[in-house]
Every structure is written in C-alpha cells, then in structure tokens.
Image 1 (cartoon, rainbow, N blue to C red):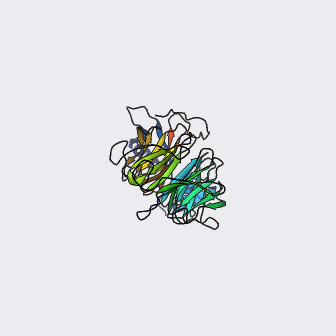
Image 2 (image 1 turned 90 degrees about the horizontal axis):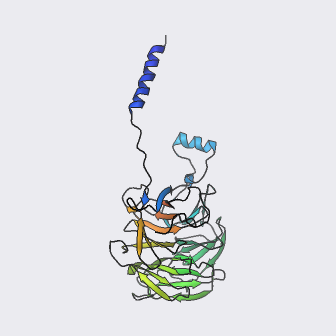
Length: 363
C-alpha cells in the first residue's frame, strides 16, 4: 500500500514552509547609480544594458518556453567585441570588430539586426560609426581602408575612399548639415598620414585634409575618433598627444584641451568622443573606465562611470565608443564586458524617445 501523508501533517508542512519564507528577509532593492553621486545634484541615471538580442526583442510564447526549459534560447546573438556606437530614435548601432559586423539594437521597435557580413559592403574590421542627418549609417573599416555606407536596416548603399586617400580609417563623423564627411586616419607608427580626410558623403570626392603628424596645434599623433557639434565644430581625439582638438567648420584650428595624467580633465587612453545638443563634449577613456564631460571651451564638468573588474551597471574595464542621442541619453561601449550601458538624463521618462530638448540642463 503506498504511503499517504495525512491532511493534518500536510497542513503543518505548508505552514512551516510559509513561516520559513516569512522569516527570510527580502533581497535589498538596488538603486541604479546616478552621476554625479550625492551630495551633488544628479544629472544622469543608469537606465539599462544591452548585450544580446533578447535585451530588445520580444520572444514568442514558444521561444520563451524553450528558454525557460533549456536556460537560453538557441538563437541568441549579441556583442563579442564592441567598439563604436551611434544612436538615434531608440535605435543603437554598434560596430563589433570580432564579428566583423554592425549590430542594431532597436529598443523602440523591439527588434535586433546584424549586418555588414555579406557582399556588397562586407566589413573586415569596423571601428568608427556615425549616423547622417538622413539616417544613413557610415562605418569606418580600418582593415579594408574604406568607409561603408548602409541604410537604417543594413542595406549597403555605397563605398567611399581609396588606398591613396585612406591608410587606417578609424573614426567617422558628419557635419550637422550632412554635407561633409570627416574620416579620421590613425595612420600608424611608421606613417605620416595622421590626419582627418574630408569627403563629399555622396560622391566620395576628397574635399580637404586637416592636419599632419606632429604635436603642435592642428597636428595629430595617432588620432582615433571624431564628433561634430551643433555649431559645426569638429572635435578629434588626438590619442597619442593625450588631448582633444577642436576645429572650426572650415577646418581651421580652434583649441585643444587635455593632457596626460590621472586627474579629471586629463587623459590616459582616450578613445571615443561624442557631443550633445548643448555642445557638451563626451570623451571615453579606456584607462579611466569612464566618460568625461567637457564644455565647448574644454573645461571638465563631470564624469559618468567607474573602472572596475565587475560588469555591474556603470562599471567599465575597457570602454571604447560613446554616443549621445537626441534625447540626451549616453551610450558607452565596453569591449571587455561586451556591453553597452545606457544613461538617461534625470527627469526624462524611460520610454521617451522623442527629439525634444533634454529634460535635464547641461551640467
């Protein structure tokens, strides 16, 4: 005869389990990090992290069941070695040097896309990325020595540059009116081609060369990334000189800021750069593990993130590209942790992807 549990004994067991559950204190609720931290007035708050397609895609009922049953879906795709990042309208484009592709995390549209791995427009080592005013995607391929241009959904449009014009293109930026394409050529230790090439983004005609190798004003030593401000100013990360240089729309030198060091306003390994609608300049530093904010005159304002050997929100070990979208959100890519952390201006609603002015004033 099978053993049967008496109802009274069963009730006691249930009560014991409930009592045990009741005696276990709830896990503490972790508040998202804010920047700058208290007692200063917070300007940015951590919003979310992007790593895999499931961070944006809505799974079907069967896919969700399969994920629960197996621990992970069979079609998981995501970041392997992210570098550059560009964002607009809830769409986040990321270059991945290991996968030789661009990954699109469409937060607003709840979908994921990967492109640049087939002809035409097959990528070899994509690094820099930028969006034009009409939402074309420009990608600097440092190995192919070209700039590839795609539509918003990954369809290849055209190829820009030649071996005679580009040696190691590492960064791209477009003028606010979309009439000038700035391509940063990092050159190399054995090259004198440390400059910015200016192209017509439609025809590919070379319009101008900005700078040459050196340490003086308007000269570069291993430049890596660039960004343009709303007033047309061009900002270039001059990595080997541990500074950022600013140029007027006509390419003339305007100012430089930063120096080698370990204090705010200095640089150790500057990489990515971005600007926002107020002209604030954001510079990611791989050694500091953060992004520093500067006003248009080069004065340091604050920083976002901290260097750490954990992958917690706001913690970085090898940050690379940085972007700021029209809502003021900041996107910081980390190569080591294979992630994009997103920080939202305090006061802006989580689901607000409109292009209105930032909810929080520039710090």
